[in-house]
Image (tube, helix red, strand yellow):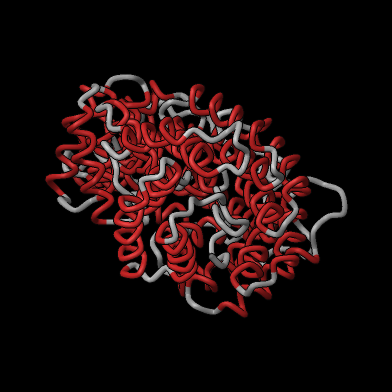
Length: 546
């Protein structure tokens, strides 16, 4: 009997292990089915990566004794790759399974939140971000992303403590200060919004996207003179969030599109050599004569230009321009031509600049910067009549574009159509009372127009005096001197003109100083100014000679 019992012990132990294994399998939570999506639109390298990770997941699922955390990692790894390749629907069940298997791992609800956010499902995104934040309450990126979602959903009171905590974690964070500024703006705390946004711009003067909310805050305070300069400087550029998990996601794919994304992030961080490297690696994976290749080359040119390699940048822009499609809308080609226009203008090659701008609006007709720069260049080179058509097109794209309204009026004046220019500016200033440059232009015309039917020195002076309550610039000073001279008050006109001349000299503005000096000589001879604007004034192209 003893022998029999001893013989049975190994079998009994094996049976227990089998039973335990079966119990572990039975108690494992139910998981969602996962399958690879149609990968035909992805690069070959990405397809290979996806199949490799799917195979690894399949092998992991077949291992009965695999720890739940390891299986969660296999699901999560496939989800991350599909997420990075923008297969959001296929990534979702991977992340949900990973989250079910490893409920204390914050990566999976965090990535899941970004999947929901990319699909526009903000309610689910908020819930997942909140879950990730509960697992790690001091995670800076999660605080910022969740705060932004609350603001977008019209709940600034929920966002405020999140951005405040983010600011406490990183006191000089531009994104945290911008978030607090956005919350204050949404709550109509305009002074608070100005404080936060000005602090953010002081830390990073290149954070161009902050100028629009800052202008709105100044408008809310009634300080329109301070709002207007910020509206001019606004550019739609995303503020980068320091986010290691998102960076890990971005670095997964071996594709041209992935390297473009990495390069853009490097550009945003002003890491020019890194951006150049990413764009070149993307080009090595991208076929010739494709939209993505043109996009990569234009961005490579931008990185080279910012690093100081102007010739290298120009070569990349020219390559994009040569590869542009014949008769198709193509954003990268438009941007390359615009960049070449800027370089040509900086070199004094105005006709070449105009030709590139004409190509830019051909490839992207709604490219407002290019439309305005083309109209401006035509007007400044003696083709004011042609510029009117382009300004009109810019206003068709955006009827409230004050710069186009101003340029149109200056072109009318250059053509000697002063009555039309006056009526145009009167209407424009009335339609957009928050744009002081239109009122200023009207005052300049009223003070200096050669047409006696247009001039009205007293009205001009009244407008300038009202504008100077909010801002005192050399341009306004010049217009005040013009108005005083028109009224015959030459001694005061000379005094004002000498002050603005001194300011222009100190600021080292040679063209402006020359103009100011010539007008000063007129007033000293008791003669009024009869030139509202010179042809080369009001330039809109960066780098154009002034």
